[in-house]
Each structure stands twice: as C-alpha cells, then as structure tokens.
Image (cartoon, helix red, strand yellow):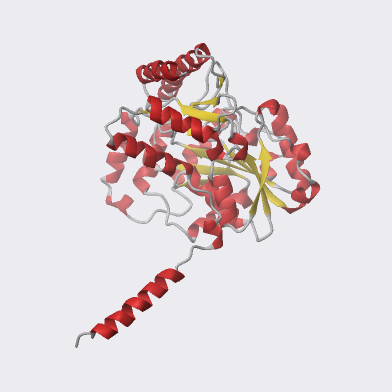
Length: 406
C-alpha cells in the first residue's frame, strides 16, 4: 500500500522540520574555520582555472617516505596477524623502539609500559588530551599564534582557551608573568610548541626552567608539542622538556613521525611523559578509537631504528631551500625570520596590509599560496607563513614572481 499525495506532503514537511532542528552544538559553532581547508579550497579553484600554482602553504613534505620504511610496511601488511584490531596502548615493539630513540636522542629514560603511548598522529592525541582533564569553566593556556588543535581541542572538551600572545619582541615566547592570577587558578594545562609552528621560534633552556617552575607552582599540566624537533639547521639541536628537572611530574610530550620521515599521510606519532597523564589519554582513546594499524606500527619501528642519515639529508635540503627563500626575500626588501628549525619561514606583511588580503594578492597576482598569519590566531596578524616543501627551483620561480609584484 503506497502513500497518498497528502501523506507524502506531511512526510516531507516532517523531514524539513527535522532538518531545521539539526543545529550544530555550541561547541562546534564556536570552533574557528579550519585554516588549511579554506586554503585548499582556494588552491583547488586556482588549479581548476589552469593556473601554475606554487604551493608554499600547508607544510606537507614533498619528498617520499624512505624506501626501507615502505618495504617494512609491505612486509608487515602481508601477515594476517596484523589485520586484526591493534592493542590500544600500541605494540610493545613500537613502545620499546620509542624508548630507545628517546634515550639516544635526549638521554631520557622512559618506561615503555607506562610512559609511552603511540597515537594515530600526534594531532589526534593533542586534540583528545583536554577531554581527560577539562571541565566547564576550566582554562587552557594557549599560545597565539598556534597550531589550531590547541584551541579546538580545548573548546571541544568544554574548556576555554586563555590566549598567551607570542610577540616578536619577546622572541615569540609567552610571557608567563603577564598571565593573571585568576587565569592561573582556573588553568588546568598549558600548550607549548618549540621549535614553533608557525613562527619557527626556538625556546631557550632558561624559558623551559621558568615554565616548569611556573607550572609546578600553579599545578598546571604542560603539553609539549615536539613535532619539529628533528628539522633543525646550523648545528641547532632542539631539547625535550623531559630532559629538565621536575618535568616528569607535570609534562606530557607529543612527537610525530610525519615531518621527520616524510610520513604525514601514515598518521603515526606518540605521547610520552608522566605516567598518570599517559594513562588518562589512553583512557580517552580507548573510548574513541581501536588503535593504529599494526603494519604501520611495524613500519614506524623500522623508521625509528633504521638508518638515520636520511633525516640529515632532508635537513640539508630544507636548509638550502631556506637560504634561497630568505636571502631572496631580503633582496626584495621583505622582512623574513631565518629559522633555526622547522621548515617554515615567518614573514612580515607590508605595512597596513592585513595577512588575508596579502595572501589573496599573492595567489591572485603571483599564483603563490602562502598561509595568512591571522589564521593561526589574532597575534599572527601582520605575518604570513611560507613552507619550504617545494623544490628549490620552484622557490626561485616564486621569487621571480614576487619581484614582479613587489
């Protein structure tokens, strides 16, 4: 028996009424637009128009994952034992590999069973961690400009970001002394990211000591995002917060294989540090995901324990690109900060030109994609970010184009 026309009309009216009720939650409504999705839309539109785009926007390495890592994935993927759900806490062999890497790289000893947690990329761990500790009314101390999930993870957990300006006058470090007492009392955690995305700043040992003392005194968890520790130049070596006295009581540190081994699409990283913080994140994740594909975990073991000369060769490539871009921009009269680490260059926009308008001008007039600084937060205004993730020939071409519109 079918529906009459009247019945269909009533049914459709009911559907429309339900659709109008599908309102986003206040948490989701309060999230800012995800910057890189907006950039990607503009880039795709330009490509549809047949324009030759030089993409200096998203920091996605242009070099392939090393062959020996791919071969490890292929071999592991042939084993049916790796086709099942993975253990939530990660494979023991991967946790032991991470333990060995931390010891070799930072001389930090970690318990692989309680102080290390593999992740589906460090981004998901960073975004999920606030769920373990924030209640409505709690605060996260968030740098600005910053990697967007620091704010997004806080908002989705029901907390509120308290913004710490990163100013060039303070070497793009947060001024801890300027955080009001009320914010300190409500704060449950503080995000730090050095080497820094997007500003490419690096933290001093003195800053890390002050940060640990400040956080311990105010009972605040430190979330250290160390994704760019291995992308360093001119002899610089980034340090782990876990190297410093007192850190093990209050620090959880996030690391990623994405940039170090050109594995952005593989989605593999880890958290390490205080056992209670690791346990809390593991509890959140056990209710959200079912672990990392085991073959990818075994490929990660190959990356961490395999030949590391590849990492140095990648840094040499980025350093050459950095020098070409920064020196070329300087010759054009632009003000660009030469990075000691990361593969980003943080560049001042011309006076009285906002970063979105300037980025739009670069795309429209030079077919160059750059990231507007304000997309990383209010205090990113006045800057754009360019990534060193295209061949040097394309960087040279970008400079030729920029000269024509300067």
